[in-house]
Image (tube, rainbow, N blue to C red; front, side):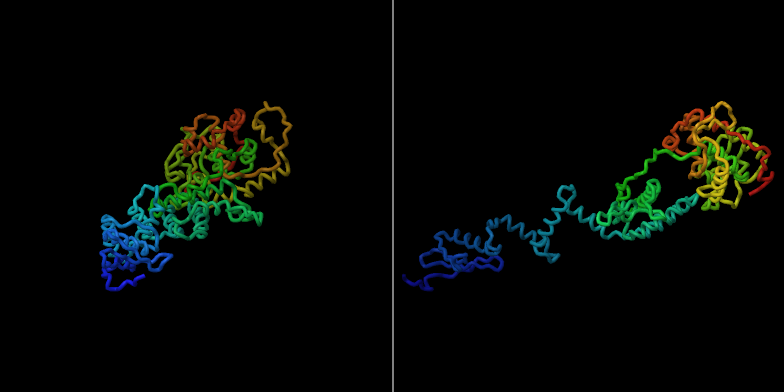
Length: 478
């Protein structure tokens, strides 16, 4: 075979793509020759009669080699224009085109189907990243400062300082980062299958989990904290994480009230100084902290005074500074309450001892509860389910066991009024006005009709003792 002389060809400028160059020559006979590597031949030569086809093949081979050998279509003029524009767009940022397109594609995977543009997502993300952090501890301090001004009874202050303080100490991060699962664990804990015990959860001092009502009260406070954060713009609008945790206590469940026999025992053993307090709560519908100052009552709080009683019109006027809601209302002086309170006509000043808190006299294991139980241990009496055996002789002797113990139940004095008075009125709207509650609250708690005989017995309660010493002299002032 005749050896080809170097003078038989003319060297042309190579076709270059990136760092890949495909050499070209024009042979003596006019054909174009190109050289490129293949897996079988590191220097494969190929000739073309048509120079345009040779140039196109050289460009294709150069592009394939530049792309790692993958098959690629030839750039059109439009492709070249797009590439030039892309380089122009990313040039000021010093980012290669392939890096920019890769980041864009990755972003599209996250926003696909959301209906938002790439620019909207970036803008929202930047706003979130640049937003000032709001640790839960700081949010709680803000919340407390706004709530204390409205705190009429100290209840919110105690709840915020006890319940929410421990919650935010457990979760001190930005409030928007607290998840529903963390709130759920704080309230309910979770079962550990290996240890076979429940971890976490709200617990009593003895280690037992708190009841459902207490649990939901704490959740309600946490929801208030998150609602405050939403109004301040610390978390996004919509359903927040605290609202995703369900309430578990059935608010429509039975409330606790005193049977007629229990109420009769309380009336018989209560000290004279606290008798008006008991009467206006069990026969008048007043709240305990409207009738007497509680342990956390603010300075502006003023309890019921004898000046608020109109014995002629049989009404009690609950002033704004007395009412829990800050809204004045009128309560009736029913016949049973009038029978106990008439002896106090002409008295002035608070109806309950000043400086002596009701929670020290009433409540579980209180002085009154112990006093009643001592009396019952010496002489068991009264059948709880036979309320008519007060001053009436129409009830036959009962085979039911006698009442041998008594337990004071929280808010049972006010629930007693709501239960019997609601059955008497059969009008939850009117009852809600007398008690200062919403109609829905009355329907939830007091739409539990009591037997007619029980209602008559409650309405027929009268003092058995004669000559009760009036604890406040006429003209007493606060």
